[in-house]
Amino acid sequence: MATDTTLGQVRRILGEALGIPERAAGYGSDTALLGAIPEFDSMAVVTVLTMVEEHFDVEISDDEVDAETFATLGALADFVEAKIAA
Amino acid sequence: MRVEPAFEQGARGRIFRIRFEPEAGSVRGCVLCVPAFGEEMNKSRHVVAAAARDLAAAGFVVEVADLYGCGDSEGSLADATIEGWLEDLATQARRLADRSSAAVHLIGLRAGGLLATALAARLGDSAGDLVLWQPVARGRQVLTDFLRLRAAAGLFASGAARETADGLRERLRAGECLEVAGYPLGPELASGLEGLSLVEIFPGARNVRWIEIARAASGEPTPAVRKVVDAWRGRGARVAVEPLHGPPFWSAAELEDCPGLGPRTVARLEGAVP
Image (cartoon, rainbow over all chains, first blue to last red; front, side, top):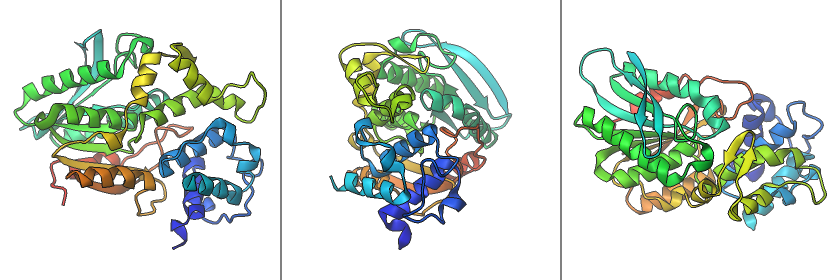
């Protein structure tokens, strides 16, 4: 089921964090985030990081993330995938 | 339904609490509700009050207190400790229990869920059901969330002067008191938070209701929730996890309501977990 993949879960987290669940449901791995979605400001970045940490029970250190991490949904999902596997 | 604010003596200072009482007739039970921490507490205050009113209308005496150093309670956050908070909560539970012969049900929102679980373990049989509203599983997460309020500005910056949550954590460990978003965070509270983790606290033999709140429910508990619940069930706890439709009102940019929270909690309290 698509929603069980890491991408699917991150997509849903995005929808929750930005308050746009219906819009986020249509996002694909190429969807641009930071700088492209108006709701994706610096506050949103912090909210997304926190929700990802709480959802997957991982810890993300500030040193691990940069603007590229949030460039697209796919980039973010890849980052999370790597954290889970670590 | 009556709402009665009061200050009551805590271990180190007076604690502000609001009691929500059913209007008349028999009291169905007592509930102690532990709030969220910091900005989450501010944003969720009205939602907790609304849910408390729903519970009171259904016959429960509900008390919501501000922790020492928080909200309208006495003391500075810089002097607060987890142990002190748990002691005050236990005293509050005992006072509530004195009003009725039944066990006191515990509800915790977010970081309050961590405290409520620790309290349940501490109170044993004198605590009834445990209801967790989107609990934070690790105190370390509560601390990180809080520190990010200060570190967020430098998230995409570079250079030695940039503050990171990890760097701030190190300074706390070294004994420094930090100012974060206007709150004075003491090293003892930080260390106490780091030591709290749901997976390591066994809630005991009681009905545990874990409610996850989301705008778009997936129907599946998250990996983090599964980790804790599996550990608890492995030790014999009766835990039911369920989704509730609603916004992340404890963190949303604008204040949001969650009207389903009260009714759902009323429906679950005192019902056996299968």
